[in-house]
Length: 115
Image 1: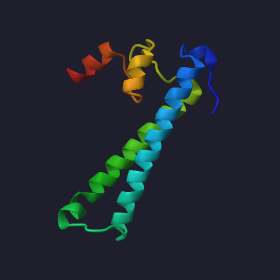
Image 2 (image 1 turned 180 degrees about the vertical axis):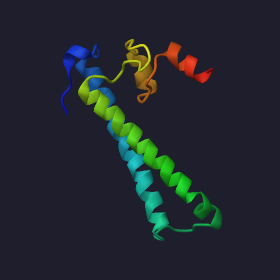
Image 3 (image 1 turned 45 degrees about the vertical axis):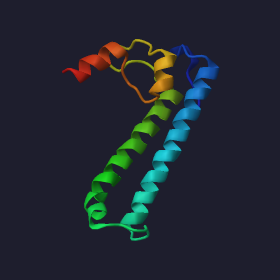
């Protein structure tokens, strides 16, 4: 992955930290998706009827989570990671550290929550 240094204000240490966080999150989410798919293929243990009924929705949610995480890694590689998608302001490292997949600054996030 290459990073466009001109379009980011984060230090190389911060970028490395965030990349590692996103890669770990991707690994966790991909593992969950794989587990759900194994259950769907009849390879899981102890499934109940309720599990089978909610399984398609759980798989879909896990697929979205994996895609969202991959998108974050792609934005990081392209240099657009960490900028608000609404106003393009730089999102502080502290916020990214807590919410590595955030796409909005606090101000714009509040607008989305109360819209």
